[in-house]
Picture 1 (tube, helix red, strand yellow):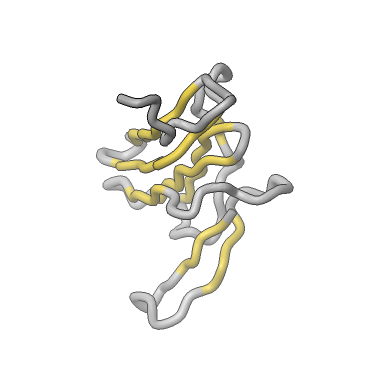
Picture 2 (picture 1 turned 90 degrees about the vertical axis):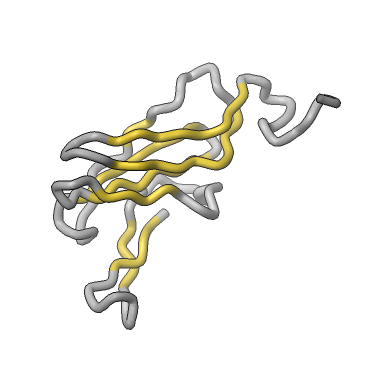
Length: 109
């Protein structure tokens, strides 16, 4: 799991690895946000939970991932984040504790 970091408004970029844990990240659209202090946050999910990491140096390096989902949840989709004042981060996702199906599966409702 990583991000593309650009210092020229996207004309060029380089890849920075955020989560070095083995295995594929299952999130095709992670939540990226920046607080008023310039700290960048990346919220995403893997097969075992929802995580976030942060960078205080414009994406050059990232913190160790922090798991934020409760242990009872077994399936996760649509992770997003929004940062506000310095050090403030909100993360939202759809999840279920039913491991037989994901939260996108309707049970006729």
